[in-house]
Image 1 (spheres, rainbow, N blue to C red):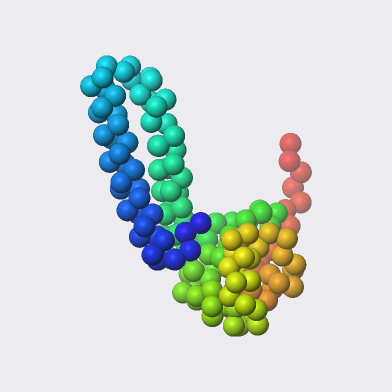
Image 2: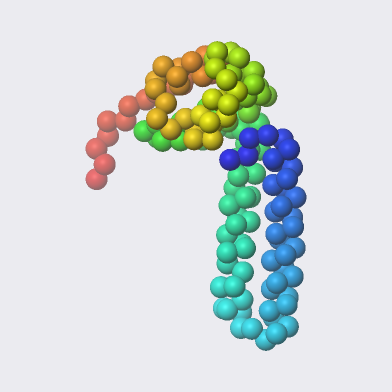
Length: 143
């Protein structure tokens, strides 16, 4: 997950480089007479890496604009907490101070996307970031 503006800029540059690299590799393989289906197989991992990075860039751009994905059954809540901090432009150091913990603790929590965090910790983070979590229970029976 991209967490800082400098990481974002590096990711954008990396995508640009990977696209150029992929295109150059396609051209090279084509010149060598490699069939198109084998070229697709050869560049698949490069293309997959680039697509994943593009998704991270898109997610970062969205959260900077205040667009957050829905959370289902609390899955992804930790990622949303990190996204909220980024959206509010609050450095980890400042969040740590508000929570009364070390910056290293905030860094660990974010790296693990708050996996296993207690409800109390999640509430404290939300309060520190002036965020609200709104829950809804869907009781519809799935066929």
